[in-house]
Image (cartoon, rainbow, N blue to C red; front, side, top):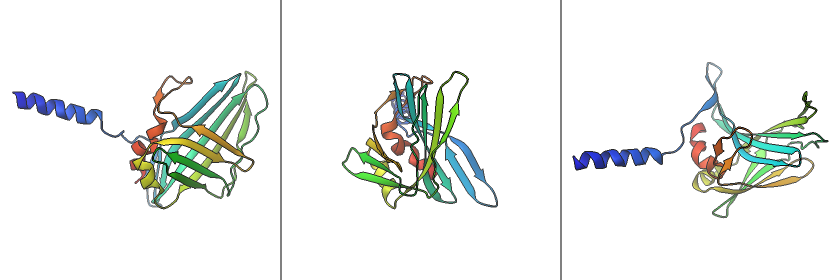
Length: 188
């Protein structure tokens, strides 16, 4: 009886520490090819003085080609400057082990869409797709991310990647520091 209880406890503990399951917003396989896109995941949230900004990641795989989709959402009752992505844009991720991983933006230029809602707030949505450099996925799977730097057409923004975020927007808890360690397996 002791062995059964010990084995049961062992398997329950293993499942509690297992990697996250893959959830896809899009998962298509047809005669043209395959396309997978994971659900969006909150990486950064700032709310201060009537301005809000959010950064979401999603991993995609198109016919064996992995990319990172980045969504920047800004909200303000004042002016929102455009942060544009172009062929020279990059995403730098500093890992806890000291390595810096660089992701390169695809050639599609994007300055986002400005939308004014009924409450008088300006909202800007900017989307960028970044390609993984050879060997970068292995580095991202081996160490948590500390810092994120986004190089836009017009400037650069730095973000501290937190271990845990409880979103003010939806109340969910996110773990951005270990995002790649938990979800890169979804596009391999």
